[in-house]
Length: 385
Image (cartoon, rainbow, N blue to C red; front, side, top):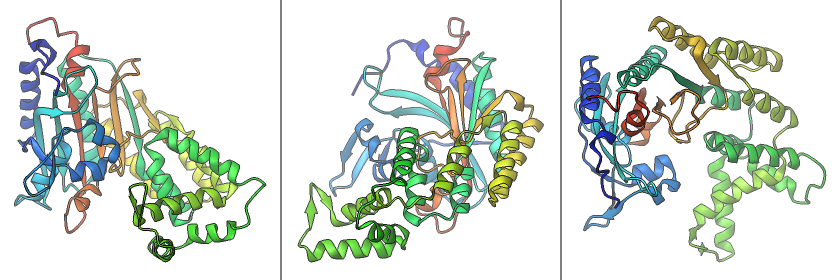
């Protein structure tokens, strides 16, 4: 593991501690989850791609463990194991996280807030952005780029288009991975052209069928053929991959749906501008996505009520943070005109709690503060902390 950075100014502990104190004063309870965590939730919820950046070990029973790469999942797990589970509760934190980062230190500080159980989602979302802006201001940074989006809008769009189940799953999986989404849309455009194959009907039938039934059929066919494991992949993994590929090859996505998706992904501007474009799209295409649009409008109102200058917010329907478990509002705060890593980042992740074992859905939203990035960008770094 890389050693800890030696320069104390890199982490500005006093300023970071004062930031944590401000979160506590705002009503959030200090959380101190264990550094050693089960690896499975991170691999399952953030994707196997995260494995290469984790520091992994295992216990005598064979369970795979890791040093926590972030604090959202550990705080959520502790909340679910507590007497507060299912009830509204807010937590704040400040502590080290561990990820391989090339030539940079693999141990670095992270602060943040996680809010669980609040049903007033729009107000809770707005509070996270407002507190994130306060965190940046605490480091003397007055002007930032506010980048926002909403996964729930894309989910509502895909549901309204009534696509084959496999297409829905594929596009939702790709949404936070912009290169993959763009590639899939391009391949879909090509797939809808001439030169289709003789077994397209079978592939289209698979793409349009219930996912469990289709997986069972493909798995049974492979078992009959005598296949068990191919290239290190199980039958289930191979069958799942086959279903995705069958969808790509079948040209099953209608041209009209492609046109609507591309128009949707091109929408951007400040929230009011984007809302106007979204309502025009919904009207022109006859799409029932008004509830998701209304949620954006309501959230924008709460942001304004908290003193956020909404005309300075950049909203894009294509914006995503590359984390599979986000379900709604997402945001990043960047140094003005800087395309690098965010200073603060977060969003809504309502599905995470059930995926971590909650018996019923629990609303959840939060953000992380990257102390190193804030300190490097802060005009106060040369002064006393």
